[in-house]
Image (tube, rainbow, N blue to C red; front, side, top):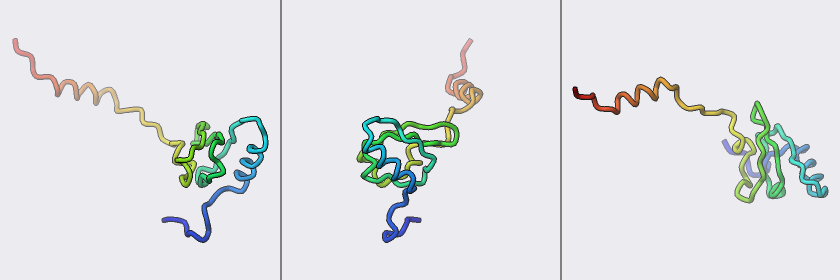
Amino acid sequence: MARSIWKGPFVEESLIKKVEREKTNPGKKPIKTWSRKSTILPDFVGVSFLIYNGKKFIPITVSEDMVGHKFGEFAPTRQFFGHTPADKKAKETEAKPPEKK
């Protein structure tokens, strides 16, 4: 369900303060955040973030295309390692035609 228009986008107040401090400082150190639910604002364009995915921090530099999305959309929490080798082996034997003697 979408957030009502009159409330505006949700962004952690501490995150807004950190971005304001980063804009005034010439040093380009990424901002660490655990707030995956925060919405990306136009003020964040060009700022580097480290978004926590539950295990490690994923580096993200915000571009104009990301405005309006949530930070969590750009730091996936699940890793797909593929199917088991047994499944691949079974698929190979099914694809080969039987050998003639």
